[in-house]
Image (cartoon, rainbow, N blue to C red; front, side, top):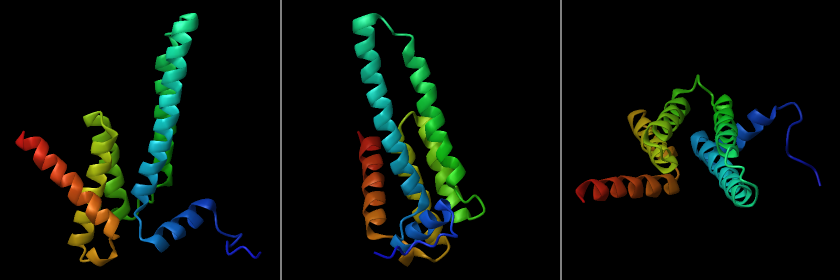
Length: 148
């Protein structure tokens, strides 16, 4: 079969073109990569606990945290920082993840700021319905959490 990929494009350009084709924001793809790395982190923690029980290797946990943190930060190089509608939500997603100690709060901030920027730029029609629903659910979650 003939591949539709252009050999002159870098992997970053191909990924960006694919993301644009599906109307998904880049920060959402980066968040998915972070979640995959979170799964690696969980596997590392489980292995560390088993190692602690079996051989007393509790000193491995800080190293695993550093490695997972480095893996998560490597996604920031894939962000097109010159395109503010992609850079601002990605920035706030990373900041909220760090300051709130919660990946889900960071993703929620990224969704919220992405929708807010698209609305301000009068490009709300470009937002995928899944992003609208997810953002509404995040906002509802925050309202209900604040009310309790």
